[in-house]
Structures are given as C-alpha cells and as structure tokens.
Image 1 (cartoon, rainbow, N blue to C red):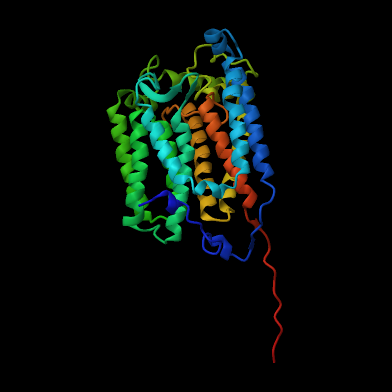
Image 2 (cartoon, rainbow, N blue to C red):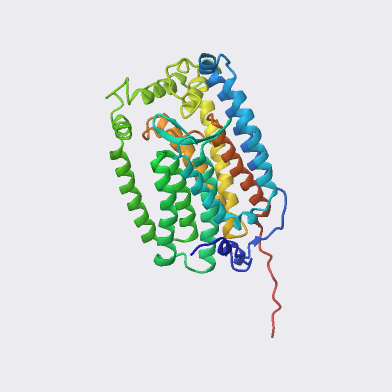
Length: 407
C-alpha cells in the first residue's frame, strides 16, 4: 500500500541514479539555475502576452467593451499569482515535495470530485470543469497535472529503490489503479484533451523509470480501447474525427473551426499580414484567445517569424529534458521528464490541430493561450524545473590517472 510515509523514504545518493556511477559526470552541489532555461521561458511568455493582446482586442471590445480585458485578466489572475508560485517553487528544494506527494494525490482526487457538486461547479457546453468559490474560479485539472507528476515521480522513484519497477503485481497493477482514478474522473467532466496530457506525461515517467516494453504495450492497448470508447460515446467527438478526415463535410458546423484556422494560417504567407492586422479574429475564428491563438499568430506574423518562435519553444523544451537528464536522483529526473513531456505534447497537439494534422482537441498553447488556471499551473511547473536545474550534474572530462610501470 502506498502511503505518505512510504513516499517520504529518502533515496540515498549512492543508489538513486545511474549517473552517479559514470566517471565523466561530476556532482555539483546547489549552484546557479539554468539561465538559458529562464531566458527562453521569459521570451516565450512575453511573446505570448503580446500576441494575446493582439488576438483578444476584437472579442474583448465586443463582449466586455474593453479591448484589453483579456490581457488585464491574464496579468492579474494568471501571470501575477503564477509568478509568486514560480518563485516559491524555485526556492523550495524539489526533494521537499516528495513527502507531500501522496497528500497532493488525495487533494487532486478531491478537487476532481468537487466539480460534480451542484453549487460549486460551473458548467459550459455541458462540461463540468470549473470550481467556483465566490469571486474565485479555477480549473482543477490544470493543477492536477502538477500533482499527478509529483505523485508518480515519487512513487516510481520508490519503486526504483525497491527494484520493483518491472513487477506486474507490485507496479503495473497499482499504477493502473492510481491512474485509473484520475482518468475516470476527468473523463466524466469531460476533458479528454487534458486527460491525454496527464496520461502521456505519466507514461513518459514510467518509460524513463525502466518499465517493461510488454507492460507499456499493454497500457497503450488499454489507452486505445478507452479512447475509441470515449469517441463513440460522444457525438461531438466523433464529429471532430469525421471533420478531420473530411474538412469539407460540414463547413458551417463541426468543420467550421478547422476551416477558419486553415484560412488564417494560409493568409499569413511568408511575412504575415502584420501585427494586429488579423482578419480572422473578427468573429470568424472561434476561440481566438484560447486554442486558436496560434492561427492568429501565423496570420499576423507569417511563416518565418512563426517558425522562429517554434524553434525557440523547441529550444526551451530541449533544455527541460536536459534538466531531466542531468538530475541528481530519480525523483528530480521524473518530475522534469513529466513536465517537459506535458509542455511539449500540449504545444505539439495545439499546433498540429490548427494546421489540420490532428483532430481538434481544445488544448491551449502553454504560455500563449488565455486562461489563469493554465498559466498558474505552467508557471509552477517552470519553477520546479528551475529548482531542479540548481542541483544538476555538469558534464566534465574524466581525469586520466597515470600508472607507474612496475618491473
């Protein structure tokens, strides 16, 4: 049974990481954070706020009589509290969160249950994804991403210590039960996009931890079956898949958003229409401040600048995985792996759905799309990465030892 006390078991430095047995790696005690990680993240965030300002002016003026409504709310309710959380997460040693892993899991389950209580939830288009406490409202699944990654990072690091990571009975079955509780509750909301992010991030941790290929294949099979059931159970999901294979099937209905997105992306050309000059944001493109913001970026800035931004984001993700690779123990490695996979996958799916490579999922682009809960959660994740980067190994050349020849 996995309890809070078992999560708190410390992992000795002599047995927690295979990197420690490599002579070409030198363990450095707490040092400066990864400044490249911080700088690239800062550029992405600033770029996102600029593009949110441009994309939201029309809808802000139309709905709230204020062209800067979304920017103000993103700053006051997302960026400001998110930065406070980032500073806290960057300051507290990441190993501290191991002892809170199980309580975070319990809190995550409770939050997911609360969205089904009338009076506490806020429904939109039939989905119960938000909690409302007076003037405060937030989306629990965004914070469950962080809680799930910390929990499974601690749990798998424990399994590595006990040498049970390849066990069917002691690892795979409990893993399915723990993850099953989270996935079932999120599927009932429903929020399939966020569910896919959490599942993939956790599976990435499991894979890095050294799971058997057969166990991963079994999980993949279960996931595919569950995914097909969820698609067939909801007509609107099936319509999205149908419109993906045939975008011209219902241009005023299920295919409307993808067609308007493709028009926006195609209109941008090489150099774009100019910052603030998007035509699709004038009530043509749905969710211009949410999952469709990338289409506005492509229309206004064009292929060259958009490609440069995506290269910057790819560089940021590479640094995230670098933090994972150089972490001094399994717990840090698993947290960084989960966060990097989360941020990479979510951006990839957002972009690919906007250009018609994958079906629409409604996933926001991290640091760009409007949403205070998403912004706070991603800033917490960056804070954790910054803290882990202060304890990473530094690759060095192994010293050559001269041996005296004996006669």
